[in-house]
Image 1 (cartoon, rainbow, N blue to C red):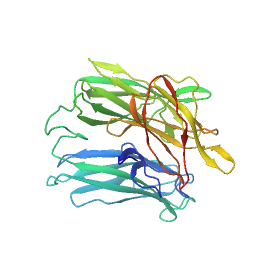
Image 2: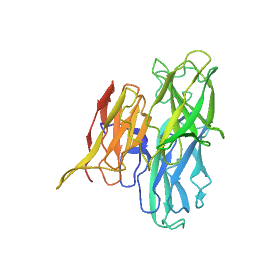
Image 3: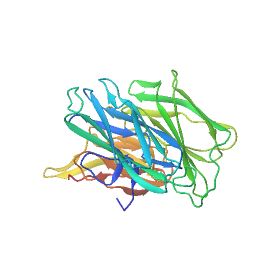
Image 4: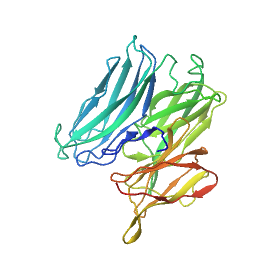
Length: 335
């Protein structure tokens, strides 16, 4: 993948070199993280939302790769049938030295509601310990303010073929980016019973909003240049198991077909996850191919990388510069 660590992306069982989201395995369908990288200063901690999709429930979460300088806990560690959410808390000791480590989360189930046996899906989280206050790639240390007085608020709605409805309990994350290249995760808030969220204490900067719900995609990026007291950013999500391909997406947009070459010729790849990544490997938009292998992504923030992902296929990121509505068909090859 051009030597890049494609954060907030793929960590499919059997795939290598990517982190963030798995593809299906026999017992656990997917395990995904709200972020795929954290930056901690000594003596601080952060939380990551863990979402597991299991058709029959009964999942045990595991965690490996935790060094002595870090502590990491999962709550809960065992998900009963019907439960999909856990919280990972990662803390750096006060004496922790600058380092970069990768933690591996596993979700273990036999697919019949029993925990502790069967196939494991995994996802990876990169943790950077630095003397700098929370920045993924600071240009100097210390330096830039984290926080401000601005507020972003809005509604998260799920769109289906029957229309759109606000949804509650969805995690909304904000990534802040300054003109000089410094950036940080401002954390997350949850939508209320009316699907509304409110994100306070943001600075005047470029902010990428990400909504993470169980089994949903965010096909349109939500990026705002924050100036003044605040802004309204409504976010739309679509279920992964019922993707909607927009024939007239709001530009900048990508549309196309994901396919594979077989003995019978070109065949569509159904159910491939599509990720659009920009800045410091931040995923701004996601979607899933339909039964014809079609996809659409909209309101993309310019230059980035687009990656189709499906279990059993080679994962390859493609550099794109989105403008207008661009047609981009992508070939996938089996492993």
